[in-house]
Image (tube, rainbow, N blue to C red):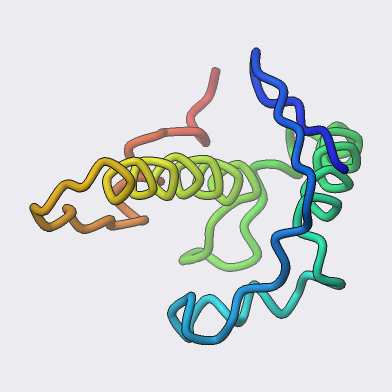
Length: 122
């Protein structure tokens, strides 16, 4: 049994969900799914939620703005993208769970990253 703390809510999951089958996700996502070791997604998320803040606190302001090439994102932009994508997938899950029939709008990651303006001077 695993307990997940998310915002103001606590979820207890009694059984392991397991690794997605190939027909449960677009082939593109296997690039990311294959990076997760083991089949216990709840344990992986719990471990990441514990390790990530410490890792991120070790990145200086200067380093957070660094781009390894002019056309690549900074660490700040990458994290903004991850945050936007999590919100997008949550919205999509709600969309399908509630039975909406209209097509979903597209998602242009570059528009989102530029619109967030995370690299501007404070």
